[in-house]
Image 1 (tube, helix red, strand yellow):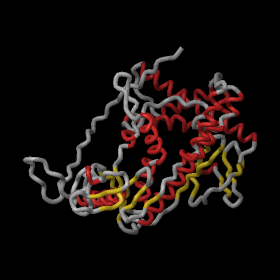
Image 2 (cartoon, rainbow, N blue to C red):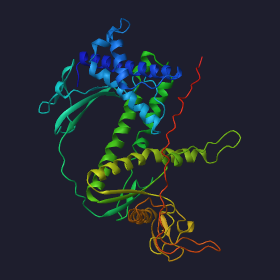
Image 3 (cartoon, helix red, strand yellow):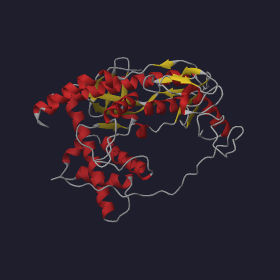
Image 4 (cartoon, rainbow, N blue to C red):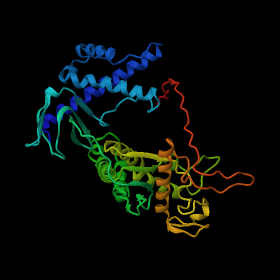
Length: 417
């Protein structure tokens, strides 16, 4: 809850960090084009000193030096992620998108949790609404702007005891009708936060479309950001509560290794080969992305590790077509979306529950063999003519990853005139 003067200075500090980041990125691109080696953080810090002492940018001295020093450090991390294939090539930052700055010196930060305020350099005491306690020793504070509201994230250091996993093993099958179905028969209903705000979002989008981009009325009508922030906050709260509950009560968690980007790929096709059922597939893609399966898996993975449990991701192949009783695999076992009926032994159950049971069985097989489960069930598959049916649990072979790192060239963009 900053004052007007504090908001002005925070925007100034965020703009200075954005300028340093963009200038460092431009320098790295020019340096690469000239055939020079990549300049690390230490070298970029010397350039920052020159920029702060330059007569062209004297306003950089108005901001804290520690916050600006972390801008080239964040750029170095972005380049490292790009070189190792974890992210795309770093892009220039634009005003209003992800404005933030970091205070790294713990001696310059004071937290008065009882009165709900924090003291940082060149801003003084700022009041805030406390969302949770601040345990441990304060190490740093990050101030960020999101949808017109300022937030502060406080990093602390504290000792944690040895985690002891509790509860049984569980397999989880995610879906659209049911967000998550567990192997014990319970399930979590979907939140569908985007679906609830879809009409209101379309209303604000129509308002924005009628105004000139960048005008005063356009800036006043940017309520669409608040709606998107509300959707994201509701989804984040839902996923954190669900993943925390599951990781607390189960010592082993098995999930499907879903390729969400492939599942939500557009069916539009091309002019030569147009797709079919494009409208229906578009609605399905929105529903899939509205669930947040990827974030749910990420949270489950690190929270299970925090509590000393086991987390395993298995191949989703045939998890919804395999009978958990006899192991028969056939696409005819699941003729409808909700009902599973085995054509071999006659077993009937909810299809999502059957998928969760198969995921749990594949998770046990993966841990027993020390690798990634490659099928949804270790039991028998439908044999082909002339083939010999394997007996027992198949040997899981891990793929050897190449250790050679390729250094791709930065993408070249065409200028629009």
